[in-house]
Image 1 (cartoon, protein in one colour):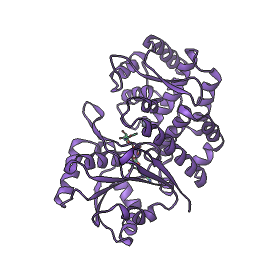
Image 2 (cartoon, rainbow, N blue to C red):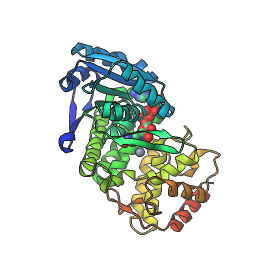
Image 3 (tube, rainbow, N blue to C red):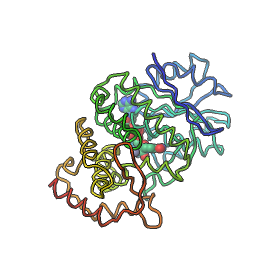
Image 4 (cartoon, rainbow, N blue to C red):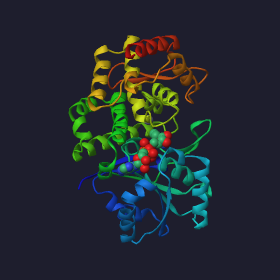
Length: 372
Ligand SMILES: NC(=O)c1ccc[n+]([C@@H]2O[C@H](COP(=O)([O-])OP(=O)(O)OC[C@H]3O[C@@H](n4cnc5c(N)ncnc54)[C@H](O)[C@@H]3O)[C@@H](O)[C@H]2O)c1
Ligand SMILES: [Zn+2]
């Protein structure tokens, strides 16, 4: 088995991301050296627990580690104050200590919630991310953003708290529903579009194999994405600058998600897919990027079965003004200006805070009319 190591360079908060096959079975050996006490606390959700918790516990016990577990309901609804309180109470009840380690085994929901619990419990304890969705492996498990949702919106309460280690086992992706897998794939495409044209060309050649289960291709795509995220986070841990590039496709995507009420009608990665196609359209419209590049982006996403426009949502009626309204509420708005991530071409993204909203509105209205 091949395991790739991607370092995240953050001074004394540096850590490794390990990507490969069979990582779950090696977890005990890989985590044991981090421990100052034998007990660890594994946080997971019901779906992932049924699939992968026994193997993780066996691996930990095999290395002399003593695991305890807390299992949460699966789904975004667990990322709230009520579940945070339940989780923190369950851990305090078991006398968790400053030196204890949390292990987040699951998708972005488990990672964000357990990571935030680790950030605030006893003013901060160590944690390990074991991401089990493609989205979590290439995105949410790296970079230290943790948090929960409130009734005012998503991810509005949280903290930067870096993990001590990230273990991404690509074998667990085999049980992920195709729709979830593709939503994560959109974030892989994002890294290529931000800064790596050669990676995009490679994805054009290997996207179908990645989707259909080719393990070396999956390993390479995940490792390459982790390296891209690690490089950006290493330069800008707290999103004062270049980290904002990671929002490519997200300003539009969030507006679509908000319009659908953050339901399963559109997954986050599906919104990002449409959003990236729109960001390249906008870039081409503004004369910043060749039309051929925008076409290539849309063609690749669509070829794998990802949505790239408003026609992907059946009967829903879209409204350009409402979508602009959501963009204005985004937490990345500053001084009333919406930050758009645009591109001069594939692999050449940049942040633009001076886009005229009227131009965006016109483009959305036309795109919506075309899809009807
Ligand atoms: N912290 C960050 O930087 C960051 C970045 C992006 C997204 N996020 C957050 O991530 C969350 C979304 O993460 P997600 O897409 O992983 O969702 P998720 O954690 O809800 O997982 C999706 C579903 O897949 C199931 N699942 C997980 N692993 C599986 C596997 N291997 N096989 C079968 N089923 C499996 C889960 O139980 C769940 O039902 C959102 O809350 C979002 O805000 C955070
Ligand atoms: Zn995203």
